[in-house]
Amino acid sequence: MENCIFCKIIRGEIPAQKIYEDKDIIAFLDVRPVNIGHALVLPKAHYLSIYDTPDQLLAALMPVIKKLSIAIKSAVDADGINVEMNNGPAAGQLVFHTHIHIVPRFNDDGFKHWRGARGYSDQEMEQVQNKIKAALE
Ligand code: AMP
Ligand code: ZN
Image (cartoon, rainbow, N blue to C red; front, side, top):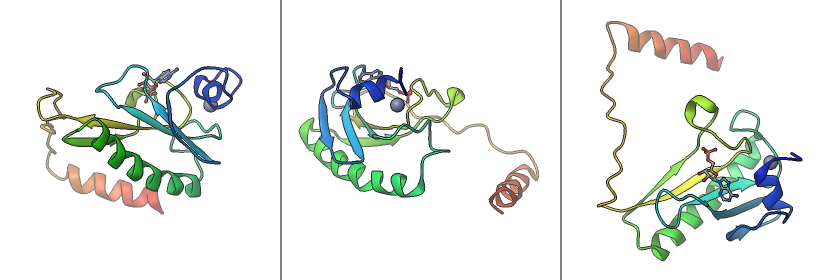
């Protein structure tokens, strides 16, 4: 927490282009945007990622994300919005303070989504389904 860059922004020790703040949540522009208007929305309390963030805080984030998505889309005249969260180094998380990206998208921005070309071998899909259902119990 002491050295967390987002906690430093929340404490006012580092500047940020804030676009939203309430008692539990803050949002500011990403300093290295994928596209203009790219914003980060985060709880003020320091949690590492989705896994340890309390349910009620995650629930409180989504209406703010919705409100900001509408405002950002309008402000930068985006064609679409990606709402995205990286959890863990393998998923590309670099800052270990729970945050959600709002990324404005443009028809001609050239970014490509995953192709999803892997497919499943025989029985594999059902096995994964069963494993996930078992993990939920
Ligand atoms: P992630 O890979 O999901 O952990 O993303 C972290 C994001 O934080 C990156 O997109 C960075 O550009 C952004 N970032 C890092 N430091 C700052 C900062 N001081 N102000 C605003 N955004 C930042
Ligand atoms: Zn933090």
